[in-house]
Image (cartoon, rainbow, N blue to C red; front, side, top):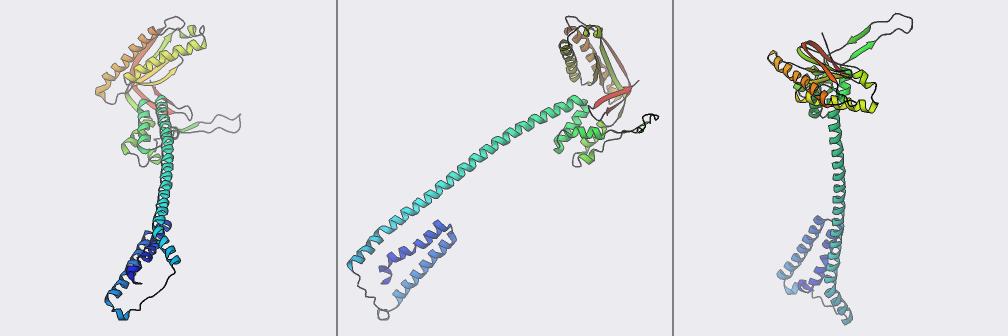
Length: 340
């Protein structure tokens, strides 16, 4: 019936690529079908234009009026109805995609909140770990440990392992209780920090190994102070009042040591021991002056802090000389100094 009379059927042919794109989600196949329809229509049109009328067989077909009316109705309404259904399907898919995207964003927000809480908890644990390390080890050792952990991504609980490895002592005791005591073997060696952190900066590893290993200090300045008559007064004081007094008193001295860059060594009863390190001979006088400032602060702190309403006197002595420093113990590590 010629191309001009068949435009309705050509329009119906385009339903195929549309359905492929919408329902099959295959744009490539839809494009191929469109190209095929265009090519076939173009070929038929070229044949009609180039061939003579005598070579074409006329198509004479008589269609009942009722059937023709039905086809005209379908041709008039099908395209609009189809595009309406197509648009509805597309919008439905868009809504589904939007809901899926919203769910994804909701999950991401929940995940970000969870990660934020975990990050805050991790930062809190890191602060507590750094504070714990600073309270257990001297300032030089603590700074070396913290710098190594932060640089190499190691957890701060490695400090216990490192400090334990720094001591390799064994006690050889005979099984027979009546046997003579055997000598205790002790091998205190330099820590192999490379085994724990092969990727850490060499300067930090060397500093940590030197800090955890025994060191000789030829120009250390030692301060030792205790309270006069503390035992007699403490025996008449409640445990809570006694501990609160020592906590305030020693805490005040701790802050003075930090301000003067003096390392606290330990407390024994009412005694307090700290040390100032001198790396170079030219700094020896300055180190001694900083330790003397701590001693002066101890005297003033004793006047400010009362025990059971009484003000205790302080005895403080400062000496300088050669000492050895090190960390000992397998549990409850102790950093101490030994010397005359």
